[in-house]
Image (tube, rainbow, N blue to C red):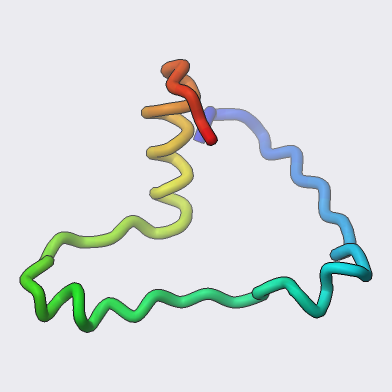
Length: 63
């Protein structure tokens, strides 16, 4: 998203969090569509690119 080579470091999930971590999340959007929302959604990659380029790199606060 920043035009740089990614530096990704993976690490094991801490033992004390393994049984509390949600490994998979998927939104059900049927009700949203039925209410009239017709816009497309970002893919994960598109969302990251938008967030980095339009917020982080422009100095907006992030939480």
